[in-house]
Each structure stands twice: as structure tokens, then as C-alpha cells.
Length: 361
Ligand code: DOR
Ligand code: ZN
Image (cartoon, rainbow, N blue to C red; front, side, top):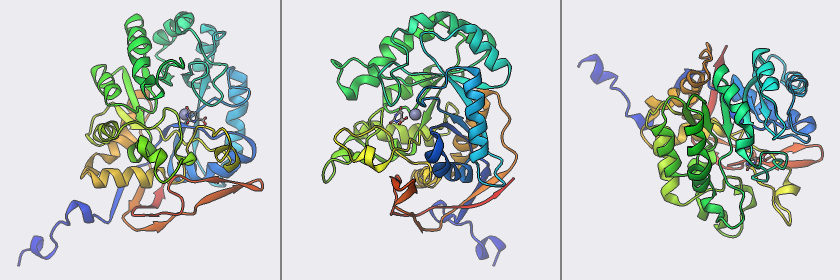
């Protein structure tokens, strides 16, 4: 009997573990204070670096406030963690090209975040008229600094399920034409059409995909009653879009990478008369992504999506260490405690087929 008959390659679906270069989260809300302390250990156990969202109250709009926030994040890391926060500038209509360039050149900003005013949580200080920022975008083109875009229009006459598509047609495509050298990340892609727009601008436009948009569709929001913990923005779309996202993420296409958009809110803010938008997926993000790649028969493409495509787009080195994920079922806790309250975890309480294994620095 030959060696290969004695030890045949296991079929893909029974591969017991996968070891990849340490991954990064290119879109994460860590918040501040008690919530920061409660959620950061989950992110640091999964990711080596994170692009930190600036939508605090007040938002992180200056180089100094970003430096101070970075210090608070570094201090809140669990002992021994080498997690690197990459800070972003919250763009307002008052942001100047000089402030942007100063923060980028000083190594404080990794990117700038564009929130259309009123599009989502803590976005009221965002931008009403994108064209006002033309000088800022020109400078960003010159210095090679990416803009990260929450791509939804805020007009209430536009159906909420169409807001991403309308933004892409009315705002993003003209912006890309006006600023041919601008590097853009379309954040939390939720539609098949946005996938195609990213692909059509390969190289200068990339897309992040969240774990929850790979699992949920719009019916999930109403399944068995209204599900506040599945509500986020952009809202999950029709099943055909979820399938397109799974295809985009797992296809090996280098223009897509991880951005969890983990957005913790206290249970009282979710199970409320008016539910806050955001899903806390930080504790189960990699277990969810790797499960999706496994289900799609695409584990060989997982490392690129998790660990290689993002650094290439940002012009940063790939992490040197490794992380192992194991095909070992593990029951998740349902929620995490924060200052006498709790935050419900995405897929909390479920038995997930994949678990985190060893991290080697
Ligand atoms: O659902 C969301 N929650 N979408 C966002 O864009 C922001 C986030 C938050 O900060 O809670
Ligand atoms: Zn976000």
C-alpha cells in the first residue's frame, strides 16, 4: 500500500485546522470607556491590527484627539497584546486638507472616514455635500491616503433597501470620476451591484465585507418577530445580495477583505423603543468568516481575504505571525457584561463549528 493510500488527503470539508498569517480587521468600532475595555480583548485575540472607526461622541476629527484615543486603546489592551490600532479621521465639512496631510504624514491617520450626515450611528457631524470636500480629496490623492466610505444616501424618500445602490450611482461613481487617483474603500458592501462596482475599479477601490452580511438577509430581521440584534446599517438585503457577497468574499478576488464593522451597543439601546443600529460581531467574526469559506469550499482563499488583501491595498506589510483556526465545535457565550449591563453577541449562545486556535507572534 502506498503512503498516499495510508494517509489520503482529507476532503476539504473535514480539514481539521487552517493556519494563516495573522489577520487584520479593516473596520472596527471599539468605542471608549467601559465598553472599550469590555470589547477589546475579543478583537485583540482575533486580529493583529484594526482600522478604528472615529464615530465617538464627540467624533475624532483632529490629529490630537486621534492620538489621545489611540493611547486609550493601547492602554485598554489585555496584558501582552501587541494589537496595533490604525486611526481614522472623521470627515466633516470643516475638515481641512492641511490637517489631513499633517496627521497622515505624522503617522497618526491611516485613512479618513466619510459618513454622509445622518446615515448611521453618530454620523450627524458628517458630510451633507461631498463636493465641499474636493480640496481634501485632492490632497488625499496626492499623498495616497485612502477614504473609507459609508455608502448610503440619507434621503428618506429613498427606500432604505435602495440607499446603498442610489449612493453608488449618484455619489460614488461621480466622485471616482472627479478624483481619478483617490483610493477608496467601500465599507460593508451589501449589494451585488456594489460588488460589481468594486470589481470594475480594481486596484484603486476595495470593499470590506462583514461577517453578519454573509449570514443574514433582510428576512432574518423579521424571522419569528422583529430581531433588534440583527439590525445594522447598511441593513441586510435580499438573499440574492447575500449570495453575491459570499461569492465575492470567497472567490479569491483581491479587492475584498475583512471589515467586521463590529458595533457594540448595550442591550438597553438595542431592545428599545428605537433600536440602535449595530451588531457586536467582534467575538465571533473569524469563526463566522472561516465557516463561510468552508461552506463555500473556498478555504484555500481564506488567507488572502483575511490577511493579505487588506495590507496590499493599504500599502502595509503583511503580519509576520500566524493564527490557527480549528474545525472544533465551541459554544459561544450569549452576551458580555459591561458596567452592570450587557451587550448581546452576534451568534452568541450558538455552537459554532469553528474555533480560534493558537496565535504565534
Ligand atoms: O450598524 C451600524 N452601526 N452601522 C454603522 O455604520 C455604524 C455602527 C455604529 O457605530 O453603531
Ligand atoms: Zn461601521
